[in-house]
Length: 215
Image 1 (cartoon, rainbow, N blue to C red):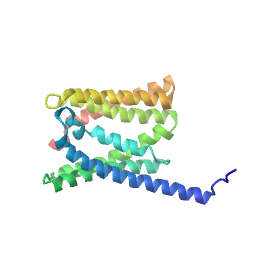
Image 2: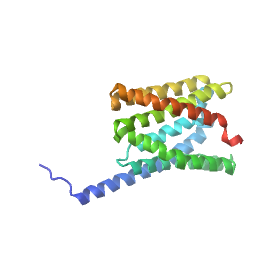
Image 3: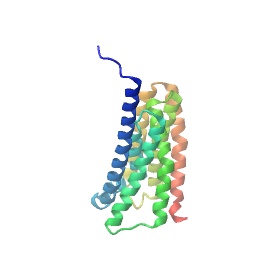
Image 4: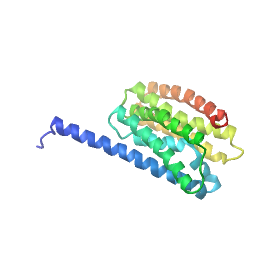
């Protein structure tokens, strides 16, 4: 019968796991940001919105934040992933001769360090939180996707590919249903998740429609 790991060994293993996850967040972020910069020129018109969608980056940060075992590590991982995405994207565009304004870069950096921890908390709640927390996390990520999809259809649908935004709404709804079935497993949890998703979607749609870069 194998012996249980000593407390010191368990602590060391936990620290190694956390370090590995944080390094992964940085690498995934930088690589994803660089790929986004190139994808904007590679993707066909029907899929081009994938490389211009905040929802795609949010999903990356959310997925990375599912890996840590502690809340603080999850929020840090998501923030690092988003920060890496922003840095990788604008650094790649700079090298390609497509520099962005300092104000634009600052805005997205600010979003990375503010929205990132929220996505990390949502991911940790979904995987490790109590039922009410899991419902809130599910509503947050699905509401973000649905809200951006609504914004895309209502505000920029004439200049982009509308089926993409409908697809993003569908992904948000399917993700919400999946978390309800796998994690929440109750009508009460489902109702709580939907109650979170609706206002989050509304807020996201309004904020994106405000276009802070134009103000």
